[in-house]
Length: 110
Length: 114
Image 1: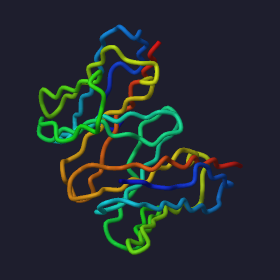
Image 2: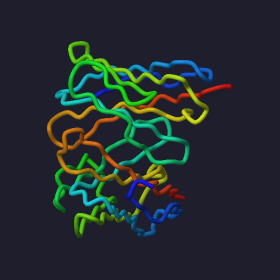
Image 3: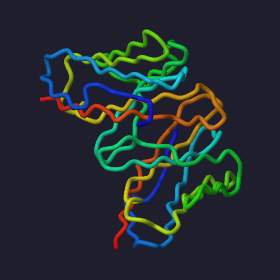
Image 4: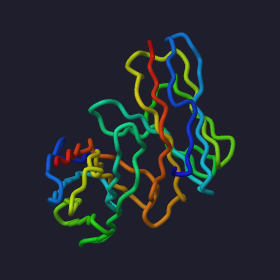
């Protein structure tokens, strides 16, 4: 089976740094993705880790440790517009199927 | 705008109705997907189409019937649904088995079954 665990909610203040963790148990592993979804909106792709280490894209970074079946999304210099749900998703093989975690609702406060 | 459109955006139907959801992608992708998103549950993959061929059916009840006439269009035909089928139905597309497998999502259809 496939399961991904991430915290259901995280609260942080504007300008701070927040880390959203994701642990996974899957029958296969090819890569870990992160998606952002604002209320009423569509999920949008943020980042992908196929290899161990850190990937940086502007204020957002994503990390993967395959040996620990663990990854995280790091958001720096938080802005109010970062308030959204963040989903980790595992790609189990070279195909195109993704298994999503339950999502982490991030609330950024002034 | 992600290049993936869905219609209708909202749908209310009775359990005996038949309706269809439509998805269109303008990105030249060759894979399309249907997902179900219910409150407090992970996104659930329903169907995957690669080059118009259905490659995955994630144990979806037969009251949901997908159709993919070409690589740009995807339909989800609904009949005799149950109230627990009320959810946001998301369509997505991707460039097949690309290196990152990035999927582009449409805005979804909010379905309410009475």
